[in-house]
Image (cartoon, helix red, strand yellow):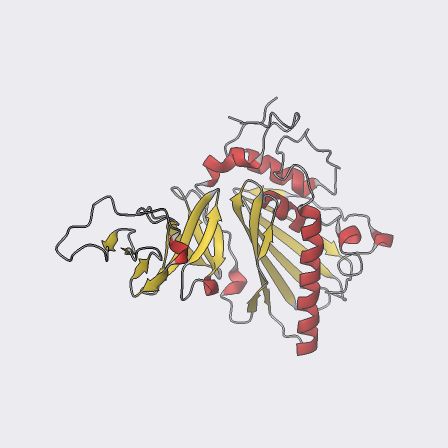
Length: 335
């Protein structure tokens, strides 16, 4: 059932209504490279988590010591245990407290001295967490393990907006000429390309031939695969050659109005060092331009009732298909 927004008439279904269904999906909470050597705090669907590498394996706990409510992310790793920074309580990989320094060695540790654990997986250069029983696979990123591709991580994109706002912005072409003029678009050629959207299970597919821009001067083909709920695999194939650049964008729904985007970029070709630096600067500029827009959108959560915002046939086809697919994850839109 939809909770609705009594403070915003017309927005009958919003993202946080989906949270029960979203608990069955895998969500990114950190780059794998960030989870070493100490613990890393994260938020997912309003819950505070800590991910940590114990004896080489990534684990995920509720970010809370059961003793005095101290975040375990403030602590540190000691071999195969995570230690609380307040009183030194040690938790093993199962979340069980195995040592309380203030107790004598012959004193039993209370059986209730444990913190909840969550399913965690490393894949595609990211740490993924599922708060419930997994109901879908992680969106594929075949280029990540392909020997002909080189992958690098873009800076984390923390935004004061919902995860769906970040995702829709990433797959929206018609804003290029206005938000990214001179980099991805040209206001003299603002007409959006025509494309069709196909759906297969938890995935949407669409694409078009893109005009030349500052990042891809020869022009290129853009093919999108949107994995529900918040992942995009964008393959950009340059015209007139075999050069391919793939962007893998995965968003963590931290809270109703906060999200974190992780962007990995893989290429099967190398750029001169000056061009590589220029491209990274452009990517950072595009991110800053998008941040200004998505953090100003209202409401912060995407309204999934298609009558709540005006949609244009053609340019908004991907967003409409995405909102319909998200609604089907477990929320009924009010009539």
